[in-house]
Each structure stands twice: as C-alpha cells, then as structure tokens.
Amino acid sequence: MSVLVAGTPTPAGQAAYRFGIEEARRRGEDLIVFLMEGEHTPASDLGEVGETLEHPDDRTHSPTGDLIDRAERDDISAVVIGVRHRTAVAKLFLGSSAQQIILEANKPVLCIKA
Amino acid sequence: MSVLVAGTPTPAGQAAYRFGIEEARRRGEDLIVFLMEGEHTPASDLGEVGETLEHPDDRTHSPTGDLIDRAERDDISAVVIGVRHRTAVAKLFLGSSAQQIILEANKPVLCIKA
Image (tube, rainbow over all chains, first blue to last red; front, side, top):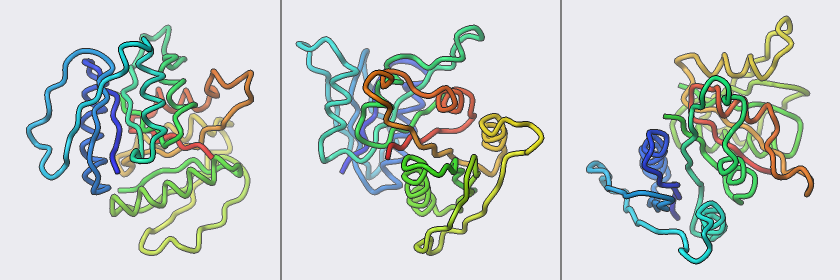
C-alpha cells in the first residue's frame, strides 16, 4: 500500500510532501508523488520509505480529476494535499481543487498547510 | 500528544472516530474526542489508546471555533473530521464548518468520509 501525495512546487505542496513521508513511515507503506505541476526532487531522508513519481494524463487536462482517479485504486491508503493559507479576504473559502479532492476522493484526505 | 477528533452522531462522524483511533495507535498517541453534538460511546477496541472526552464551551455557542482553538494547543498533533457526502446538487461544495476547520486549524486536518 502507498500514501498518495499531490506534488506541487509551493510551500503548501512541500509541507504536504514532508507529511506524506512521515505518514508513509508511520504506516510502513511507500509513497507515490503525483506531480500536479512543476518539478520534483526526492527528499534525502526517505530512509526505508520507497518513493515513486507519477504524472497526470496529458490528454485529460485535469490533474485534479486524474489524482482522484488514481486515489480510487486499491493500492492507495490515503491522499495528502497541501492547502494554501489564503489572503484575509479570500480565507473563508478553500480552493475548488482541494474541495473536489476532499469530497470525491474515495480515501481519507489529509490536508496540510505550509 | 493526542489526536483530536470532532465527535458528531453521524456516519461521517463515526468514520472519523474510527480513523482517529487508528491514527492515534499508529502514532503511539492518545485520542481526544471533542463532542460537537450528541452523545458519545467509547469504542470497545481502544486497546492501548487512551481516550478523553471534551466539550465545547457552552458560553461561546461556536463548537467549530472552540474545536479550532483546542487544536491550537501544543498537545494536539492532528485533527480528524468527518466530511459528508452531499446530495448530487450540493456535492461540489464542502460544508462551511469543514472549510473553516481545514483553513484555520493550525494542525494537519484529516478528512474522512462515511
């Protein structure tokens, strides 16, 4: 089994990645980084946690939908996403991708702030 | 350290409670059930997980705000909440309490569906 983390090149995405490593270690599972955007450099302290990099399907143009589909599969135990602290004005609402993942993913969704 | 779970008498609340027990066990921590509404019966299979029941402050009339304040304290490692599967029409949006907890709680928020 693996923990699936949404990879994004943002402070919240990095915090999600760090939490994903810890969560995989606690569970004795591996980690799949699903790269929503940007580049990914594996952490130097993965230790016994095996990490695999996966990508959305270029043809669908929906990284969020692809992540939700990936989470559906039997090898995934939990999904980790980064959540942005928003500006004072916008802070009452979560981003629509985060909402969609939390509501539609068929697994626990762990929300990490930077 | 303790895992803080939002206790509600709903299928999603029960699923959050079950996940909270597992998460506390994985972390070697205790569990605090913060009873947002209704009654709570401790599970029979807590094992080595110590469970404490806490309540919102009657005077504030804001169980959600009280939960967020409680999560702020140093003894809490993560917050577990139940998330409702909504009707087809409303399923695009998370409930406002869930959004507020995810955005404002100063800890990882683990979202569990029934």
